[in-house]
Length: 335
Image (tube, rainbow, N blue to C red; front, side, top):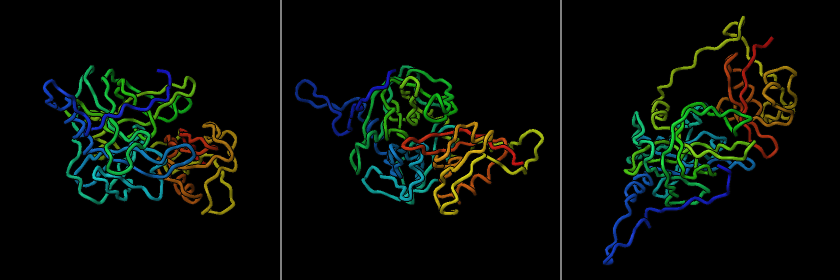
């Protein structure tokens, strides 16, 4: 589908009514589902970088303040916070992230009695109606209801979005539908069925640079549950052939010395033939995160880069002028 600048159809629960003959007002058939989703979907605010928005959507997934949202650099903001449906705003911390599925689990210190259940199978079949609830374009800033798009679930397919073809990496299956959700701020929103049960989470914007097309998709709920529970299989220790597991990692990045460890993590030079050179990193790139961990200064980068496993792929997020890039890189063993 060719990329278009479209404002999503805003269907607010407060206005989902239809007039029946005889002046008898009847409730819209999707109103209960929208109301249930609105009560369990939140606004997430973080730090903006360049043209990357500093806001997203999230879903309440436990009664103890756990919020599931999409991964992104906005989570590295100093003032990360979550806006609940009642209009209250609370400081949030990042519990864990998934680079493969582009997920992040946040925690706020307030009870959240209304939350989404995470079933082992999406409660929707191909061809079913689905509703996508999100804060696309930051239409809600307080206790206002979120926007709702309606569509039909069309396909479940594997997606292997890699840097250079898409805007960011993703490895896993996704649900495709015909609701337009690939918009700023929509990522992390809830996709529910006609009864309000969670089907999946709206994924990050994927834009193919070669064709300027967008993909409207959700991460299936059966992939969300294991991440929230922390049930993922621990990664195996990876090593380069002929190298010991304790080998020191080397990316081939040298930072500007100006400012010392407290200075920004700007790349001064990239060693020829190094993993960084093969990944396309350049001088003056600013390292924003390493393996999903925020890099606030050169000291953060040195610490995180030194903890990497040789031969184990990691994702670096960098800022190049006004562009935010996700780059896959495999650390080599230092000579």
